[in-house]
Image (tube, rainbow, N blue to C red; front, side, top):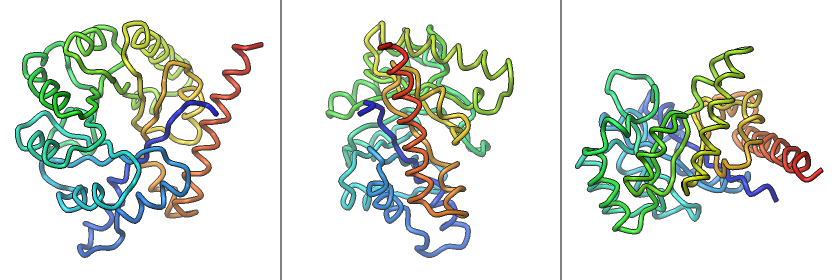
Length: 250
């Protein structure tokens, strides 16, 4: 066992459904398929503009799936009320701009600590695991710890988009941030933009315990099926983690 969890983000199943309307394809069905294919959790982002996941999707996910639900949300009163009503396993606070196509970066926890503090406190008091989606910056991690968030998720988007030496630079930053998170008592996750060719080095980082992957897998599902895409990603993660464990024990 690698000890590395895989969370599947099903947002873009809903994106395809909403492009035409109706009920097909159903993100809840995708969540159930993900569970069978080896996922450890389901992630869904309920955006302010409801561009993909809807309120009904969240309600049905809570009712029908057995895997833990990671509810991605902006730190707003509307989303807090929804989270407290459903009480998912986890809530990941993310930055959100109406004009963005996808999440563009991590939360500014340092600059926004006064705004974030009451949301982190309210979610934690309700027994919901709180994570903060952040850049690989020790200052952001230190503030997350001060605010009482038990988990951070490192943004891997810049790493995935870069090539060559620039990618190596971003990977080194993520490795250092993950080690720092572990050292100060934070559980460390990672995600955004991960694909078959980029997941290995992130999966090999020993202090990362969970990866959250969505858009790439939904895209691959068009060509080869969701079950196949998830199983291939799960195998790539496990192979990288096991290889890294073997190197450290040698």
